[in-house]
Image 1: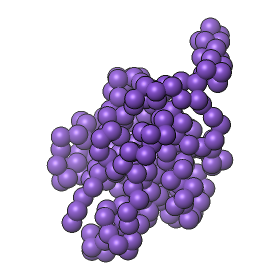
Image 2: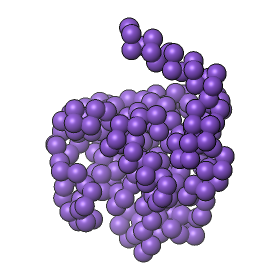
Image 3: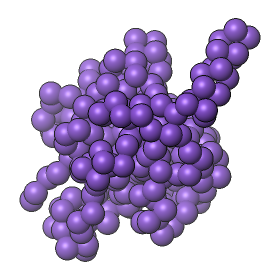
Amino acid sequence: MLNNCLKIVHLFKNALLGTRCVLCKTPVKLSPNPHPNCICKDCQRHLPWRDSPSCPQCGNPSWGELCGQCLTKPPYFDQTIAAFHYRYPVEKLIAAYKYRQQQHIALPLAQALIVTLAQQLKQRPDIIIAMPMHALRVAERGFNQSFELAKMISLALHIPLQQCCRRIIHTPPQAGLDAQQRIRNIRGAFSCGQDIRGLKIAIVDDVMTTGASLNELARQLKQHGAAHVQCWLVARTEHHD
């Protein structure tokens, strides 16, 4: 009860007084509009927004058509939408959010993705899922960063959030592994326990690097009957083939 009261007081104070930009600490006013308003306008203009043509399936740089990799060895997911390139300062924001318990950063990250989806989304999914995290990793970190983002996006877009899959293998972190090691590391890590036959599904995650985790999850979803799988990402690394 006390925690809920403190949260209400904090939200009320922010509504009246505003907050500070998570990058430059300049005071900014919160607003109900779907814009990354925890980041000031000056910093917004310098964020690495993904505004150049890319492969619609994997998000790699292209002329807006399927890239050579997706033509020769297509992933199990059908579409990728990402708000940012994974570089400074977005990489620093995501690291602070995930590893330093700065959960307020989830708000501008989610809002940036919502803005991007409003511009690029062509096929509305039936449900949203967050990239599952093993229970041991959740206990270690204290929260699933993708699930917190997915909750905000679900609420804003009025699309149900359903965790129909779970992480059943506690794999080592993907960071530091090469592409082939990531594929082997994540193989068989997910299990889907709900009827998702015929559903269009969007996976929310913070970052796509090689796409191994997202592809393995999409593989499970497709094997269980999903009709279409999208990846919704805050940021995506740049791979020039």
